[in-house]
Length: 547
Image 1: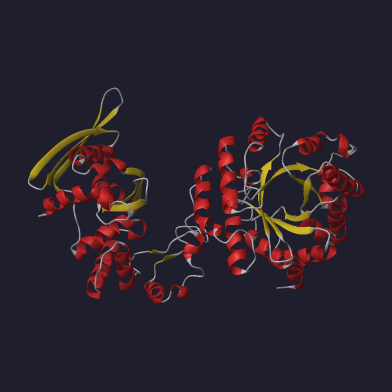
Image 2: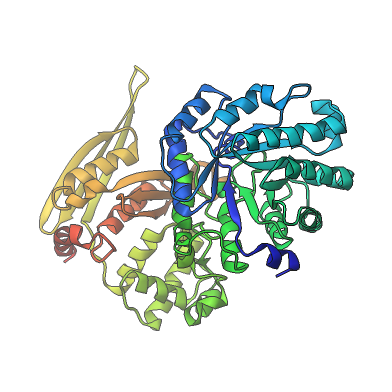
């Protein structure tokens, strides 16, 4: 640790601004109820501060603060956000400051100007007036019994332009009684070395009088790195958003900052057992915000601990430290052995073990050969874990089909009214019983799905719990036009887990049928975690059908 670190201590406060700064991102909008859910998720993770926004900027924010006033939080303090007083208005007469003072929130975060460019172009005040605006605004709220955090907007631009004045601005906030001065890289333009040097200077300047914080944006892809550099330079308060939400390219991602600080640098940020909920929290808030989780997000993404290359997997099987920087379970994630033409026998053995199957190296080598051949034909098992699991089961002799197909037929008819009607007929065998079913749907896949469920739904009641949640089509060799090979990926879920299945054919309906059957069969396999007891009777019927 540096001298700054040892003198201030090893605790770092995390300040989440998802509900304010995060909502400035493209397409981001939450209801009051959704914001309350996010706040409780952040509190459960162990955040010290949750910035709820401007308490009077619009009717939704007014309602939010009214609801928050009645909520109970175990860890987090709610912060209300606002600006320093207007020019030529006394702090005690400023309406916006009065709203902050009257808010239930125990913490008020004030943003003020640091860069002369903004004084000239935006606020149009003198340097002296700006300093007075900062100090008097902070002092007023302190006099009203509030804890005050001061956000020095565009601090690093201002420091680069005129370091002496930037330090005067920070000093004015400290003189007014701010407990923390957060240095803001508002344009996201700074690099870690610049942030480190400037932060170190501020830490020395306010030593013993206030905590130094950091607030970074990600415009130069350095948001997280800049926050870490500031902490190593002595900052003990970090602001950011969940999953890096925010305006333009986003804010510093607290979901990455937290484990980097706590696991890599040894700082105390949240209670030790809370970090195991990191992945769950990141995905929950993505879901609330209607954002697709980034599979490549560090620590919490589905690919964060995914291994594909044969040599990598071989190393992992010997010692996970060979290709993993932390244990995925520590952050609530899991290891994933991806299968592809690059994979080796070790990957297949590991995936089989995950499915509760035992195979020897010879069988694993045979499966690798099948995978390589099929991937040359257009299959992509990396994105279809269910189909790969079934492939292992088929090759190892542990496969229980739901039925035996005799034939299927799909008819699409367009009427003179402009409507399109689709009808599917399937003929299958379950044991010695021949089943024929016809169903209508809004398309061929939907009609086939309905017909199949109608045929075997009573035999396999768990089918009703399986939903097809995504359907993706990709043309693999576009130059062949309508004769091109088509890859279909179907994602399914039963409320407990989700999985992907794949089909490949020159006929899009055949490719869809392959993926559909794999998706349903995987969900019905006995021995699969959480589902064995639900499918045992149906699996036995299917076993008879295969004989």
